[in-house]
Length: 189
Length: 288
Figure 1 (tube, rainbow over the protein chains, first blue to last red):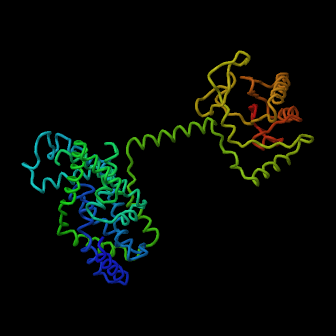
Figure 2 (cartoon, rainbow over the protein chains, first blue to last red):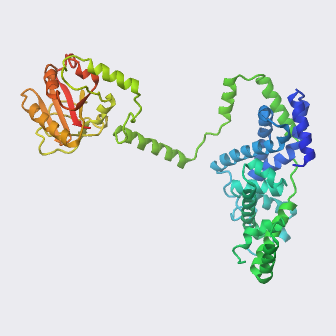
Figure 3 (cartoon, helix red, strand yellow):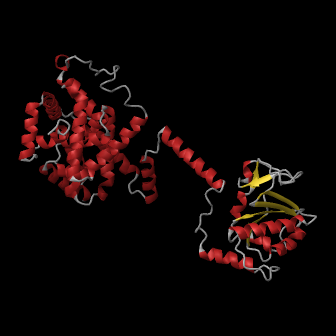
């Protein structure tokens, strides 16, 4: 997260702790976009992503007392959001929510056949949707590291803090996740 | 550098983190290997696609929805007590489990229950009886009158009684046609002796000490018990003996045990009043 936003978040958290309720609205406004996109890329469904984002910020409001260092609000928020996403993803998976939506599934509206060029028939929005779908189909650990690094643009150190893994592991997992994504996207690349 | 090593270096190459020698080897291999060149290009395209991914704008009603939900929560629970917070936490948990997980859990629980019930796993586990309780039981057993001259006996926990019941085979040397083994009595009703209904032993006697000594003492006891006209003796196998006797004969039975290394359960069985009012008392005798 950019340092400027981190500083602004820390100020808002301090204000909120002092009882300024408007600070919470500003805090949500500042982060709702990235958290909504994180949830959307995780569960690949707009309604679920919206609901997840709402749950995440309600938990932020309720659990803010457990945040020790305001300067680390960003990492804390990502940890909390990923926990919510993991739980929701598992629940949806158990209910069969993700069935029949694979890129390789012939019933999927996004199914590509070999030899068909996506460039000619798909808009940028369609291609984005395919990429999001490919990300969503990765294993949770692979998905999370791709989202944090390649979508959110966090540094390796920040990712290590959020996922509680060493720097070397962050890099090796990221490479494996990217290779897995490449394998899924080969048909449209 | 061979083809299989190259993909593991993609991210490091992208981040310019390879050493000069590694980078030269990486680039040299790419120049010479068209397939790896194609794969590297695909990897770069993947990264480009990721970079080009347009963030989706958050729905317009998201912020009002969040603020309304938080506001409602605050009004409903201005200051949550600890039980209320715990209840909320409990409600937030997702306790749904997959069918295989649930099936495995139930199966494991059933297997454990069967093992415990069949005494394949001793219960209570060794060490569960603390020293103080063991001493107290020992003291109460030793204080029972009528056992003068006998060595102190450590009562066996009552739960051990559940380990004695019928099994479906009939040994040749057992005249009454029933057999006993270590299967819980609740598993199937049985007739211990002809004419009697399902019944658990009232007293358990367990011989202790070395194996040869236990066998000798049990055989000796079997002969002594068999000579009693009013006692009925079952001897299903070498490690188990069943005995039905009138309660008034219990003192005689205790005399037969005198001097032998045997433990008795329950401790009340050492009392002269034990079994009073019953027609017979059933005793199971086995090795430790």
